[in-house]
Length: 388
Image (tube, rainbow, N blue to C red; front, side, top):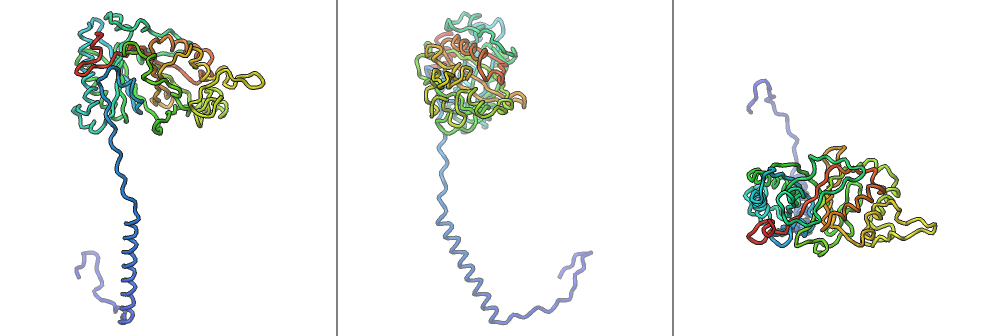
């Protein structure tokens, strides 16, 4: 036997114990039986094992072209990115057309899966929208809705101008933040080539939510219940609409410190089911006039649900879509996007909320924007083809 240097081995071999033939035969029989049993168990396991589940089919792509923009009419996707761009002060309609053509081409190819970027392989669906700010619309004398105007100041606002406003607001949504981040790169490249500059950008997300369910915000409550159908004609004006955007910081720790019933009274809904305090299911219509025997309202006078009720605005509704954001431990909250033909509706609702909402002590509005959502791009055309 070879011996490694420095590791001497004893060349002597001790006597090995002798095994008689009967013991050897017995041991062999046991090993054979064990092997047979193991084989049977393996076969049984394989037969009983459920067949591998086929992966779900990929989600269908969402068309970019259409009378109305996909970012409004399609279902809310769980990851979003908003980008606000500014054009030079002396830019004309031609510069705007170039900007819309370049950014629209990126999103059209992203929607149909032909954008040349390996990082985007297999990523549809993608939805998007483009909206023009009031200042740009006025500067270029565009045929924007007469209702398009900046919002008034609200009590308690702490708006950062660097995080709000903008000439062109783009929103792209997808199933994963990876996709929106990659698309933001392409959009900024196209925007820079067209002479535009980034004003601000903001990413948002939704928590895992069952199909057809209402997502929850960082307060733990369902957010977006009782939304109108995106096809509701009341939301539209010549296939365009108006977007109101608000970045709202939420003091989640202070709100969580309230007793459970206090949180529900402030919201006007139950945390577990989303049902209004006057109902038993999420989509029950809140009865803001129901009272207890002592005369107090079942949904308190300062509850968020009461003060934002369409009943206080003649039944007018806005399509509300909120995504959460988490930029720092002390800067977490809601990206509130709402669509309506007249932003005066939002102004009325927000005035009531700012003055009396029980949630107000836990909310700070830090950014704001209003923009005209253009009609969709016709097949072979671009955003704003009929109005710019």
